[in-house]
Image (cartoon, rainbow, N blue to C red; front, side, top):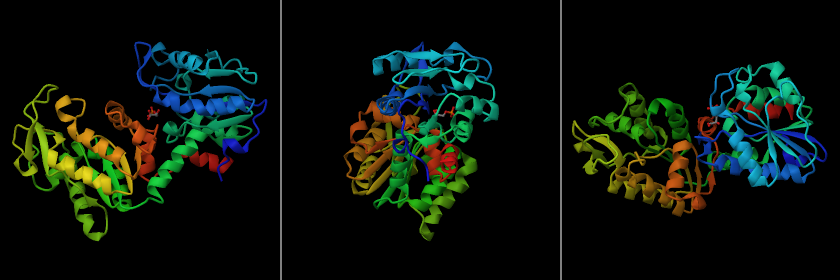
Length: 390
Ligand code: 3PG
C-alpha cells in the first residue's frame, strides 16, 4: 500500500517534494507552464499543513557534473515566487550545506541532473537528499519511469516517503482509462514512428476495442495494407509488425481504424497546398501529412460513441496550417464526446493547447515518457519503490 500525503501529519516537518518542473525554456523564458501549474496545489497543501518545503526537479538533460546556465531552474524559482506570492530561493550549494526551511518557507534545489550519480541512482547522493527532510513526497508523475537518486533512491532512505496528490491523481486517471474503462474503448496512437511506440500499440491492441494509428505510424499501417505511401515517412522494417496487428483483429484484439483518405503535399513544406487522395491513390511524389475529410468524419463518429478515449499523438503534421484539420477534428470530437477522455504526451498537449481543448478533456496527463510506459503496462519504478517503503 502506498502511503498518501494526506495520511501524514506534516506540521513543523521539513518536506522534500520531487516534482517534474522540466518545462521548455528558451532565452530564459518559460514556454509552457502547465507542469508548474500542475505542481502548485501540492506545494500549497504542504504549506497549509504547517511544513517547510524543499522542492527538487531535473530540467533537461545536462551533462552530469557540468552545471550549465541553460539548464538552471532559476526561471522556475522566479515563476514560483510570483505564483506563490512569496520568495522561493534557488539553492545551489545543497551538496555542501543542508538546506534549512522554516514552516511556511519554500526553496527550490538547483537541477538535480547537475549532480554526479543522479541518473545512476547513486546511494550516497540519494542518502544526501534524504537527509534534508522528515518526509519525502514523490509527486513527479512525469519522471516516475526513471529510477534515479531523486525519484527512487531518496524514497528508500527518507525517514518517511509518500505519494503526492498529483502523482496519485495521474495514476487514478490512467487506471480509470485502462483498468476499469467504460466501453467501447478507443485509443489513438499517433506520432512519427511505429518503432518508438510498438509496445504501446501491442499492449493497447489487447486492451481496447478500437485502435487508431495516426501520423507516420498510420503510414506504416497503410503500407502494410499494400498501398503506396509515396515519399511519406514510414518504416519498412515494421510493416510486418503492423500487418500482425491488423490480422490480430480476428482473434479478438482491437479493431484497427485506418484512414480511408489522406491529405498529401508535393513538398514537405509549411506552405505546401493540401491535396485530398483516397489511400489507394497516393502517388510516388506525395507526402502524406494529414488524414482526409472522410477519415476525420469517421474519427469524429468513433469518438462520439466511445465510453473511454486515450489520446497520445497527433494524426497529422498539425504544425503546418494546411495539415492541421485532421488533428483538430479529432481533438474537437474527443472534447465533445461524453467519453472519459485522457490525453498525454508532448505533441498531444501542444495540439490540445493550439485548438483550446483542455477544458473539455477529462484528464490531461503531465507525463510524456511516463505516460507511454504506463500505457505499455510497465511498472513505474518511482511508484513501485513507494509500495516497498510505504
Ligand atoms: C519528460 O519530459 O518526459 C520528463 O520530465 C522526463 O524527462 P527525461 O526523459 O529527460 O527523463
